[in-house]
Length: 171
Image (cartoon, rainbow, N blue to C red):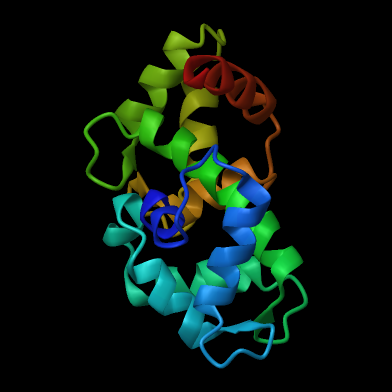
């Protein structure tokens, strides 16, 4: 994410609206005021960080998340919203992914829940992890984490408490 922001000539905190606007128009290669999937995927490939570990299908899933209208195009408003949500989720993901391998294991998940002192049973910890591990491969990818953190089922209330706790850690 920082790689994209640097490409636009700014850092995360530096006049954010102008940096996002500049970045959007740099990515809009055909200058039609919209970013298509090819333009978007090229940009994601230059992001660095956790995005380096995404395969082509996961990158396409990120585009679908950003493409709120489902028309294969992202306007400036969609892009700004996606950047904000993605930066927040990427920070959370990197905090939970303690070994920085690009995936969250059940042990890493358990460790964060323990540090948060959420007082969940082992069964509840496993259930929340399994609910987030959409492909049942025993690890949570950034896409799976992103979907979980953006409200995909949270019966135990972990999501709200986790966002609050992680937010405090990042300040």
